[in-house]
Every structure is written in C-alpha cells, then in structure tokens.
Amino acid sequence: MKKRLPAAALAAALAGCGGEDVANCAALRRSAPDQALEHCNRALESRMVWSTEKAKARVDRGALHSDRENWDAAIADFTRAIDSGRLAPRVLVAAYYDRGSARLHKGELDAGIEDLEEAIRLDPLYADAYANLALARRMKGQLEQSLADANAALKITPRHAQAFLQRGATYLVQGDGAKALADLDEAIRLEPGLAAAWNVRGLLRRAVRDWDRALADFDQAVKLRPRDASTLRNRASVLVLKRDFDPALRDLDLALKIDPRSTEALLRRAAIHGERGDTVRMRADQSAAAGGTVPIDAASKPAVRK
Image (cartoon, rainbow, N blue to C red; front, side, top):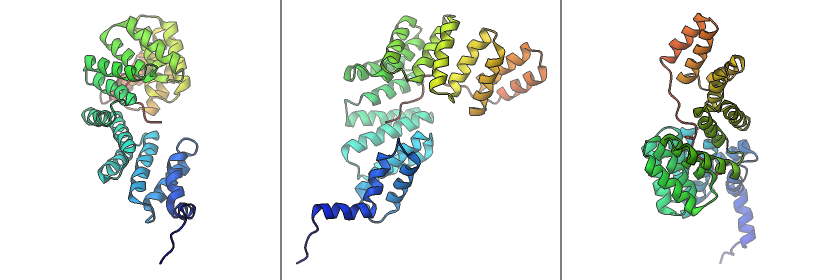
C-alpha cells in the first residue's frame, strides 16, 4: 500500500512544480509586474499546474496585460479563462468585470456592457461594476441609466470615488453644473489621486470661464497622469484662451506624440500657428486633422481591477 505524502510535503512538491509561479503571477502584479508576467507564462506552460490554477493564472495575466493597456491580449486571456469553466465563482466575477472594462477601453460598448451586467448578475453587490456600467451608459447617451447605475454603486458603497466621478460627469453632460461640481468635489476629497476627477472638474470650470481654477485642476491632473493625452489637450485649451501659447504648444506637441491622430490637438495647434502667422505649419496640421480621430470625454476610461 502506497503512503500518502503529508500535506506540507505535498504543498512543497506542488510549489516546485509550478505552484510558486501561480502564486507570484498575482502577488507580484504591482511590485514587480515584469517578473509577475514571467511567472504567469511559466505557470501556463507547465504541465504540472492543475487546470483550475491555470485558469486563475490566465485571469491574472490578463490583468497584467490590462495594466499595460494591451487590451487585445487581455481580452484573449479573460475569454479563455471564462470559457474554460474552471474558474472559482469569485474569480469568474472578476474575469467578467476585467473583460468588460477592457472592452470599454477598446470602445466595444455593447460587449463591455454585457460583461459588466454578467458580473453584476453573479455578484449584485459589485459596486465597481456599477460604476463602470455608469460610464458605458453615458458613452452610449443613456444618461438616466448612467445615473441609475452610479446611484446603485453609491448605495452599495457610499464612499465610492469612481461612482461620484461618473455621476458627476453625467450631470455635466446633462448641463447640471451644480450637481456635477458637488460630485466631482466629493470624488477628489475621497480619492485625491483620481486624475480623471481633476480633469473633469477642470472641464466644468472651463465651461463657466473660470480659467485660473480650470488650469489649476488640469495642472493637478497632469501631475497625476503626465502622459494622458486628454488631460494635456484640455490644459492646452485653457492656455490658448489665456493666450499663453508657448506652454500650450508644449502640451499639444506631447499630446500628439501620445495620440498622433487627435483632431482636437491638431486643430488647436493649427490655430496657434495661425495666430503666429505660420501658415505652412497651420495648413499641415489642418490637413492632418482631416483624417484624425475625435476623443471621448475625460471620464471615459474605465477603472481596472486593482
């Protein structure tokens, strides 16, 4: 009769056969993402890792791809993990949320909404999913549904900064500046590092011609997220209104390095060149803008799972 290994010995054996890779795939996501990705890859290539652990590692690798904004690779990993049928209930909820958020980042609104709704069906108290759903509804122009989803998130988690941000952004689209400002102030109070809240509040202040406070908000947003093209474009817009052209050009040049086809940035830069009598550069930017892209609103970047 064969003897069974003690539990500790079995755990040690498994760690040597991929268990350590499975654990570090998730554990090192924030502190050492490159190493985490290596552990994920090894876990997924190993024949000694059980199918349930491989499915979990695939979700963790998808999250690493999301952190790098590699949305196609992230969606592929989440999809394979979901389709495997081997995910534990909580991990399955996370996989639907993560895939839905990645799809929103790609502009696949209907597919993203479907995934977020499935995450909520599996976990009706998932406030983060309601907050991202509020964003998606606004992007589709479904403003009342967006408010309802943000309110649902706040009912579950009353101090949910992302939900205040999304509700405030929807109020801004509706033209209710007072409610928008109250929500954006609260989002910033709860989470001062939430760059999008500073960005959207800057848009609100720009709309009421409060240039100095708008600029201060955009400055803070850029400090928190220095390579966000939307924030740079917005700050440049206020600098142009203040006729402070040199820093506006610096912001637009950087924004166009990040997002070379931005119609907004190209046209703003063309206007500055026109003001300065540089018709050659003005016409070049105007020509490029004809084939450019139109940005979505400043709060339309879904939150990824931390």
